Length: 179
Image 1 (cartoon, rainbow, N blue to C red):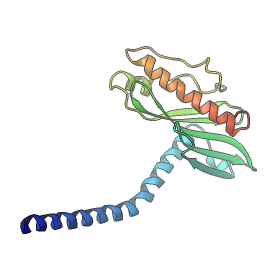
Image 2: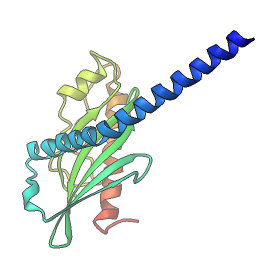
Image 3: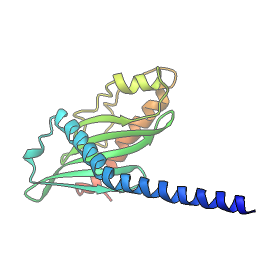
Image 4: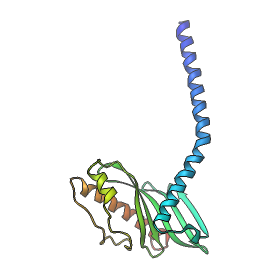
């Protein structure tokens, strides 16, 4: 009985020590990780031709809905000019995450796949190599959406298409044209 109690106490102390160490490490690394993610996202925007210095206000909003993880709003003189949405969807597998950039005219300025769990060699290849021809499209019109074919492509295509629908719906609200 005494040995079991001692072992239990030792495990409790080890758990407390390990939990405390993890909390301290998280305290110091979480801001660094967040800053790197933000820098990567801003670099991706600049690759799409968005010059952040052109905007006098850059704000972020998180947890907008279950399908929009985050939005970055770029404004000039108090007027919203560009919205960048991190949209969560699912293709063949869950975990599809896209960044979609929309301007005040509802034009898609750019997009990129940030993460996915699609099948390697099939859906993953489609996401990495296929251009869905949406740059320049005016949302909610998806008539320019260029799907591709492969065994799981219809499902992957539907997931990507749905991400554009979600971004278009939110952009209509943010730019004052929707509910």
